Image: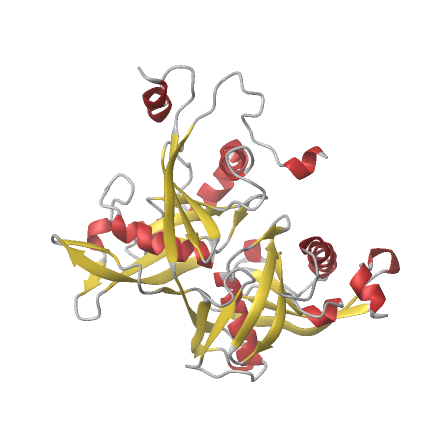
Length: 385
């Protein structure tokens, strides 16, 4: 057997091969696991998530970390059956993976999954594929994705070719996630002298003012100028400086009780990321998100957009039905995300936000691990220095 065929099949000296489809959304990767992953035990999606954390985390690091991934890789593990698919309330489940663990919601991956789950015809990957509703007049297919935060409703533009429905990459996928809300506004964070970064010191500042909002995950949202920076793009500030500042803010905000209170799910009550914004207003703005273990999102961050729109409604900067365009430094001038408050949101209360964006295929991969490889579990270069 040729070495290529041996690797693809997972036979010979290699362990079971894990097959993935890779995509990106506005530059941010999503590695979708389609086969080769062991069975996740447990009845509910959160139980399966806990099982994966406890028993299969070495596979997360294999796929996310070097040499197969990198510190900023992102993944989606399809879960064919959950308690909500059994009740007819969802079509398929998903667990989101990153450099640190498993997140509760991910917008950019949801956009990518919308395209992929419409395009696949493989029932072993998506057993309930045929029950998706296709609207011929609007040329859209509806998908109900069960994420750890709840059910996310995804609308995928579609075409019909040779009698089969496939995604239309020329139009944006949109999703409406779980209720989003402003959790805390104008929170003053004292920065200890020993932890002040250079830009903050240069401005003679000792405090930073942040907002906290939820869009499927909790984010601290802070203007770049609050951190002592002139802006995000084109001002000569390095990624390393922004990393240092946001890591400090995240640690200090995460230590404050009551800022990430969820109305029904205590397991979701943690600070997932920090979003640095520039020129945030009713029409959107540029943002750079540091999440998980200081992973940097190349996209405008879908769940972050939900949080930012909810915050904008609570602050009176935008109203129901108004659409803003949000960018990352990568998407400026190109494929940003739209965000529209479609329900609720008054006075910081729960509201639904529609987020739109476009995703693209980048490849299909087969990952294997040879038994003698001492780096089977993967590694991150930064941890080796």
